[in-house]
Length: 442
Image 1 (cartoon, one colour):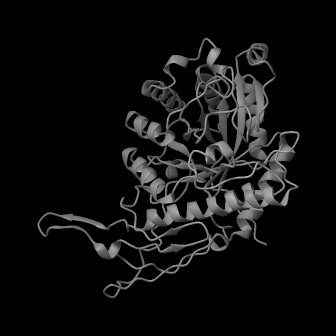
Image 2 (cartoon, rainbow, N blue to C red; image 1 turned 90 degrees about the vertical axis):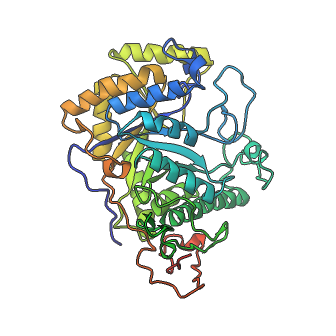
Image 3 (spheres, rainbow, N blue to C red; image 1 turned 90 degrees about the horizontal axis):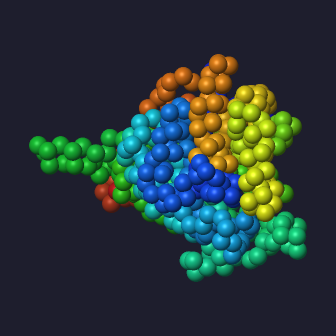
């Protein structure tokens, strides 16, 4: 079995991102002096955060999103009123801040379970245009019954057992999880095909001849799968990056479905190791899925997620975390490792995890108003001093920052079709990584 490789990069090409969510990842973050709770639903709030991340030369920011109110429980809603509830649409926020920034990547989160790939394809293509090639997307699935009830198109079984944890030993639960992630894989496949459905030079825009578009360079995708049937083409020309990067968060669970989605379908995998052995095991598992999907030669970045409480004095970081825990009524725990300490100590951990196989890190600021500046003005200079992080942006697109080549459209080599002909390319979840048969032009 061949061994998949990580994207090629120099010793100074450690990649850093931040995950933006409300006032921060700690549920009591909005009550901190550095928080701006009254500004959470304003454009200026998000513009300020992304501008700060760009000042720190970060690769990209992700914007959290969902189709139900935030909850203290991972699989269903709650009735709490002491935590931030409500959010803006991630794609629209990214589009709003795009013209105010120049280099940093913008990666909104989109739930695949209750949305349509055609809509997402043109939304992210549009974001790529308004950002001049800095768009990406993070896809996620939802098994929450309250979110399904907003749409009324499908019913989902309860996942929780008596202890509140997913019942992975229940065949129905396992089947549901596999279905949701297989659906997400098909979703990503459809989105990419739609991005490719316009060749790069499909737009002629020749005033003298009156020809705006070359119809032979617009293509049906004719996707026929278990979850979607999409004819295409897109109504938006091919994005500036060709294919904006796609990412997904993957936790380890007995089904293996999250790692399979990352290995099979994404450019960026966000994983949640808690120690170095964990890093090695997760990297090996995802690379094995990548190899099994026939993607051994393709670049795939693996970013470690860390929740961070950062202060110049480690005692201050501990005290701040304790104070927030007291306000929340219980110690903070999450899906990712929680780091509490100084920027220099975090730099040590980052180097350790990178040596074990990660190519980047997505940091989740516990209190965004405090911990984001500590990342950009504390951690970044520390990593620069150690020679492992950039001192200037070296590319104008997100793919360029990540060292990902710009791919050609899969349909660009299609021969001119006979009049009115259309060749159907069959696709399914089990064959999502298999190249499609050529699709003919519209």
